[in-house]
Amino acid sequence: MRLARPRPRIRLAGRPLELRLLMVVAITLALGWVGLASTQAGLLSIGAPLPLMAWVGGLFGVHLAIVVSGRPLDQVLLPVTGLLGGLSMLMMQRMPQDLVQQRFGDRVLGLGDSQLLWLLLGLAVLGIVAVGVRSVRWLREYRYTWAAVGIALLAAVFLLGDEVNGARLTLRLGPISGQPSELLKVILVVFLAAYLADNRPLLARASLRVGPIALPPLPYLLPMIAMWGLAVALVVVQRDLGAALLLFGVFLALLYIATRRLSYVVLGLLLAIIAGALLYGAFDHVRTRIDVWLDPWADPTGSGYQVIRALFAFARGGVLGTGLGAGLPQVGSVPAIPLMHSDFVFAALGEELGLLGVVAIVGCYLLIVERGLRIAANAPDDFQSLLAAGLTLIVVVQAALIMAANLRLVPLTGVTLPFVSYGGSSVLTNGLVIGLLLALSDRRAIHGAPAPAFRVRRSWVGA
Image 1: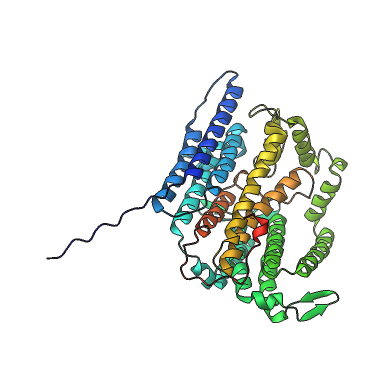
Image 2 (image 1 turned 45 degrees about the vertical axis):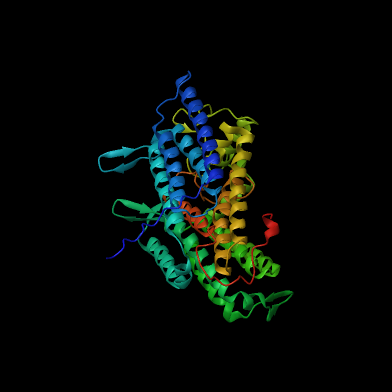
């Protein structure tokens, strides 16, 4: 007589910190929604709360999925992402809806509904990756395959992509379109993390000197530089200089983390200055962006208009802001802040939330830095440590670039503010990034991993 096997029990792992933080996020977004609806209606109102309910419901759905999975994942990243995505949902619902028109069959979605759809899809990607990815060995083993796929996608965009505002960035397949340069960021980080983990001792050892700068053996450095240089060259040719700058920054940071050699960073910055000078002389759009950054008032109604209006928006916001829905999105039919749903959403938030709101948003990205570096410091092997650090850099370097550009601290690069700016490709890619970070935070994911030869310094993230 065959005995029946006992059914496996599902062990629910409580996540009290994440639950409490999600409740705070839900209350904060609910208050923001009521304030926005009341401002628009001219009296106390909750408006039509379906978008708010959909987003908050999606956050708690992902939380429940992680609880059921029983995985001890990081409990801060999901609430922080939820708050940033919720701010995006509020701002896109508040802005003129005809800024974006997405057609799905006979149905046309405006800006707010389109962004909510992308946010929910990005949240689904985050949840599936966080719960489903139990090992990242396959990423390491097929690193050259991913690199080839990324380069092939960029080449396809260059040859077949749609050109918008002089830049060829979008690849369209039937009704679906996207920017492969967003996915390239993740692919390049995977490649660099794998290559640096395999060759870290040789790259850290200096055997070649160029003046005062010590370099590793060229056979081990050239393949990595060639891979990075080819990707950046394609991006520059496509005129997506924001992505090129982002990739370069992540490349330098990962190289320093792996080798701890400051000379590589110095050499990289010198090469960046030289490349910037050459691009300034060779490309009109690069020259225009730098000239506008240096003196936007030289052409206040033309090329400098965006930057000037963004500065005015921060000034109008003051310390406390004008309140959600009480800003100045447009004058007549002319937007007061051009591209306020993408490149200048940080300026729009600065106007309506003020200095305190801006500091809170910056704090959210600093939390992502802290949690990402903590995950890297606790990783069981070199590859996972570098991968976690690189994924963190993707989000925070991109956020720093666009926030600094809105404040006229650096030239405008055209990258998006992660989880806040409008854009399906950006939201989905960043959802993938946070999902991978959550999966890497489970130190039980890979059993028997060798002890790392180095770690991201714990002093950077605390005990």
